[in-house]
Length: 217
Ligand code: G3P
Image 1 (cartoon, rainbow, N blue to C red):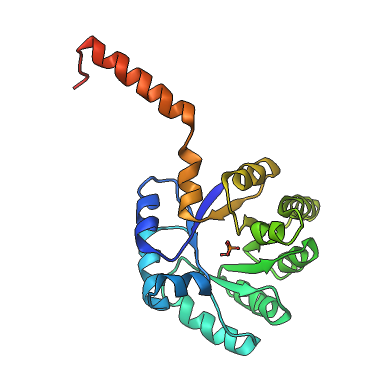
Image 2 (cartoon, rainbow, N blue to C red):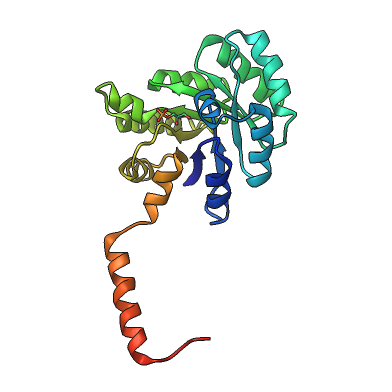
């Protein structure tokens, strides 16, 4: 399973990239606004920190302007993945861009039928928002299961990128279902490393090791 981090903050990306476990980055207009940074500058900086796809989202709502924005964004770096909303114009843009060999992440997906449309439009990634689905009284993981089934039925190459991840349980369930990618805020990724028994075990081993008076180096 690929791990993307969902942020436009440079330091958390640098820190996670150093673990060797980070496969990509996703941003959106809200995350750019939260960072307070210049969109194009921060995207260029992020693209230098990770080799994998870095999603940068268009903000136009019509196909023609989306294409113009995508042209500016994809010139930033080879690993820019253009993010488009799941609308008629967004999918028209997706089809055109993927036809030219540009990676596209279709975002704001809340139904399996929408995910089917994105696959037909040749999307590289589909981003179902599980957290926001849960917030509205649905089960986000049912959506992931349905999309997995449909994509497998037709052998679509579109990767399921589980987005709007709020906790480690979402990551576990997504992995069990066989989602290709998950994107989570830095805190959730750091939480994946944690277990109380790991901490306790280290404490015990260190205490016993100290009693030996030995050193490895
Ligand atoms: O980047 C899209 C998605 O991950 C947003 O998450 O927490 O704002 O619903 P959230």
